[in-house]
Each structure stands twice: as C-alpha cells, then as structure tokens.
Amino acid sequence: METIIEVKELHKKYKKRKTKEIVKAVDGVSFEVYRGEILGLLGPNGAGKTTTIKSICGLLKPNGGSVHINGYDSDKQRLKALNYISAVLEGNRNLYWRLTARENLEYFAGNRGVGRKEVKQKVEDLLILFNLKEKENELVSSLSRGMQQKLAIAVALLADTEVILLDEPTLGLDVETSYEVRELLKRIVKEQGKTIIISTHDMPVVQELCERTVIINNGKVVADEKVENLIKLFESRAYCFTVSDELTQQQITAIKSHFPIYEISDQQIEITIERENDLYIMMDILKSEQTNIEKIDRTSVDFEQVFMKLIKEGQENDRALASS
Amino acid sequence: MIELWHLVSANTRKEFIELKRYFPNTISMILTFYFIFLAMLLGINVIGDPQQADTNIQYVIVNYVIWFFMLMTLQGLGFTILIEAQRGTLEQLFMSPKGMWRILLARITANFFLNGTIVIFLLILSMFTANQWLYFRVDLVLPIFFITAIGMVGIGFMLAGLAIIVKQIQSFLQILQFILMGLTFVPLSVAPYLIFAPFVKGVDMIRQVMIHGYTWGDFTMIDYSALVLNSIFYVAIGLYIYMKSENVAMEKGLLSQY
Ligand SMILES: Nc1ncnc2c1ncn2[C@@H]1O[C@H](COP(=O)(O)OP(=O)(O)OP(=O)(O)O)[C@@H](O)[C@H]1O
Ligand SMILES: [Mg+2]
Image 1 (spheres, chains in turn cyan, green):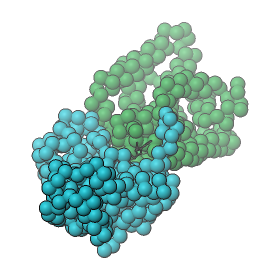
Image 2 (cartoon, chains in turn orange, yellow):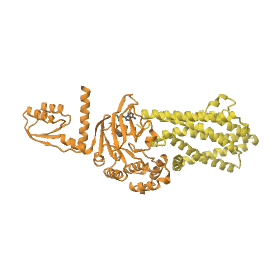
Image 3 (cartoon, chains in turn orange, red):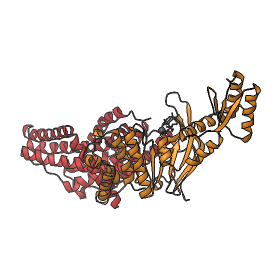
Image 4 (cartoon, chains in turn cyan, green):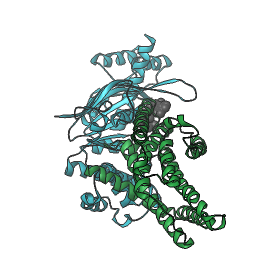
C-alpha cells in the first residue's frame, strides 16, 4: 500500500478571541492515508476533525509536526501540495450562491488554471452523474441543501485531484439525499480510483464507505483501524452477564471503577474487558455478594457502539493519566 | 502561461456575470459616469474662454478617470477578500494551486478590462452627445498610466493583506479614497518629496502631458526611472506584505468565519 498523505505529530492551537484562552484543537495527531482508500475521520464535536482537515488542505499552519501530500509539505510547499487535493469544507459555503451550478463548476476549474473548453465534457458528465443537469442554469441560492452539497462534491471532482477531502458531507441532508451522496461516493471510488478522506458523525457513512477509520477525540488519535477489525475487536471483548439478583451499590461502584465501559440494566450487565483477567475480576465482584450468575454471553456490537466505547475509553484513560 | 490565461478569463467571466446579475448597481454606475462626463464636457462651453477651459477640463476628466481606476485597484482587492470571507468562499479560493495572489491579480485584471471598456465607451459616448471632442495623447498617457497602475496594485495587495487579518476595515478602505484623491491632486512641484509616495509621479507625468503638452522627449531618463522604480518598489513591497499576512492568517486560523 502506497502512502499518499502522511500526517505526523500534528499540533494546532488556537487562541480564543474573547477569552484569550488557548485551545489545543489538535494535539499530536499522526496517521497515514493510502492511495485509493476511503478513510473515515471520526470524532465527537470539537474533537479536531475540521482542524486536521484544514491543516491537510494547507489552510492552517501547524504549530508542530507536519503534513505531507505525495511527498510535498502542505505548509512549506503549499501550492505544490495543493495540486493533489481538493476539498468540500464544512458547511454549505463552498460555492458562489449568485452563480449557477454550471458557472460554479467552470469558475473553480478556471481558478485551477483549466479552461472551459477543456472541462466541457467532464462538466456534462458530472452534471448527469450528480443528477443536476436540469438545474445547471439555476442559481445555487435556489438549489436545495442536498443539491448544493452534490454540486460542491462535483466541483471538487472536477479538479481531478488524487485526493478529495470531505468534511461532514452528509450533515444536514435528509435520509434520502444522504443515501444518494453515499452511493455516489461509492461509485466514484470504484470507478475513478480516488483517495477520499471523510470526516463524519454519520455511522452509516463509515460502515458503508470507509475501509479504515481514524478516530480522534480531544485532539488525539484514539483508534486507527479497519472498521471490521474494530467491530471484531470489540465483539471479542464485549460480555453480557445475566444475573438473577439485584446488584448492591458496592458492586455497582466496583464495576464502575474497574470497567470504563459498562452498562447496567435490570439484570444484565454489559462490560467491555481489556484483559482475560478482567472476566475473573467481574466474577469476583458478583460472587462477593453471592449474586447468582445465570449466564455469560458474548454480545454483538454495531459500529456506533464501538465508536462510543472508544471515545469513553479514551476519556477514562485521560482521566487516569491526569490523576496519576 | 496558458493556465494564467484561463485564470484571468475565468475571473473576467465571473466578474462580468456579477455585473449582469447586479444590474441596478451596474446601471447606476454607468449613468453616473455618463452624466459626470457630460456635465464636464458641456461645462467647457459654459465656463468662459473655451481655449483655456479645454485643457483644464481635459485634465479634470482624465484625473477623474484615473481616480476611478485607482479606487478600484486600491479598494478592490481588500473588498474582494472581505466579501469572499463573508460569503465563506475564501477558503476554497485559497485551495487553488495557482495561489490566492494570482487569483487576486486575475480579478484586478478582469476589473481593469471590464470597467475600462465601460468607462472608455461612456467617455466616447458623452463626447459624441456633447459634440465636444477631447484631444488625448493616448500613446503617451496609456503607457504611463499602465506603469503607474502596477504600483497601485502593490498598494491594493497591502490592503488585501490587511483585510485578511483585520476583517473590520471597511470604513478604513472608504476613508482611504479621500486621502488618495488628495495625493492625485497635489502637483510634484509643490511637494517634491511626494515622488516617493505611491503613484504620485505617474499622475504628475500624465498631468504634464495633458496640460503642458509634454511628449516622450520632454521627459528625462530620471522621470522615467522614477516612474518605473516607484511602481516596482510598491508592487514588490505590496506583494511581500500580502504574503506575510497570508501566513499570519493561516497561523491564527483567520480564513474561516469561525
Ligand atoms: N478558528 C478557531 N479559533 C478558535 N478556536 C477554534 C477555531 N477552530 C476550531 N476551534 C476550536 O478547536 C477545537 C476543535 O475544533 P474542530 O472544528 O477542529 O472540531 P471538529 O472535530 O471538526 O468538530 P465538529 O464536529 O463540531 O465539526 C474546538 O474546541 C473548537 O472550538
Ligand atoms: Mg468540524
């Protein structure tokens, strides 16, 4: 697998304008992106996804570390690096609302130094592919949010770069359009062999599109794995104890302190273990009050749960670090 | 090279489309120009001795046109940054591998071309209406003006750099036009040190041509060198300050609306 983007020990701080407080938006993020893959960049609100993406795009200068695109430093060799990437940034302001769909496509191509005639055929193809042909002469301001988003992706595609970055591409779209966008992206990767980085909250996007995911929280990477491996990993660690008695407060406290990820409901206790030994600890806790264990099951998890668990685990680790 | 051409033509198209879409704006600009030109031209007949008034009115008209282009150049880039930042499209522009400064340059070239065409057309039209024809040494005025404009573009870049960092400079840009108007009206003979100020030398030379009938040979090598060096100096320093400002903006995350 050939690396096309390398993010190394990236740091980015902001100074809040009003309070002058320093925010470490990205705090030592490292990962690689391979040619031809779709990488999901996940994390809760404020995790640092947008900051990471903008650093890759050369819109932000890192305070430390580096980003290389095809070998070019996205800060020191910014314009060279930009030859390989295009992006649809967060929100719906990637287009000129007072230009039509077609004019936007042509204008942005021109800004990259490509003429109207050269892109004529591709503009046609994209308008058809994105189902925007009928709207080509309408002002962007009159298009729906979904159409605007599709057009923004089309503009990024027209740049014909190897890498496309999409920051929350399905945010604010209805279920149907979100599905359409997903299908389009799938097709683009299959047919055009692009490398795509998607930042998202949208689990179906990750599950359906992304082979691999980098999960960040509080500016740090908490996981960098294939989606299926993450699910498998968590499934191998997730247990459900069914008990016949109610737990005492002491037991609950003990569970909380041992297992960062747990869920207690009625007579079921779901935990995620880290070591084999953890299972015995759990049994000891239950035995300490003579709680009757009816059965122990492996539980199946979906990706959303995996995500939540990873985030929780990361926060617990941070807390542990901070208190030690 | 061909890529730069596409850059300029795409931006010219965009600016042209916007002129069309903001038709009321464009029309009021056109009417204003037309009537100002007309009033000036007709004024020649009214104010006393036409022989004398002729050169003066010519000069006032040319000065007015220069002032218009100057304003457009100086404020244009700053306003472009402010408007793009407001619309949220600034970051997309910054993602062009051609570099934002080339896009800005393409925009200013486009505006020169579009507004230049409109203004020259209107000037001819109003001369036709007033049946009062002005005599221009176009072969002399145009090259001098062009070199002067390069220096103005430099100042335009400085202000654009300022606009990237400080988004509240709208009123400053507006006040600036009066300072600049002052600069264009002061003859160098009154304040010789203004030769170091941006574009004053160029405007002064145009004045010499218009009023005193200077020709190519009447200017010395010193005049030409001062003209060229002044422009080179201001465009170089302007671009430098602009680039530095870009860096500051990327450092502090000022390109987005955050
Ligand atoms: N320009 C800025 N100035 C100051 N603080 C900023 C700026 N941009 C981001 N931040 C802060 O940096 C942190 C990371 O923000 P970022 O936008 O990268 O997160 P995100 O993962 O994209 O979140 P979201 O899911 O909400 O889009 C947040 O705490 C945010 O408030
Ligand atoms: Mg974000």
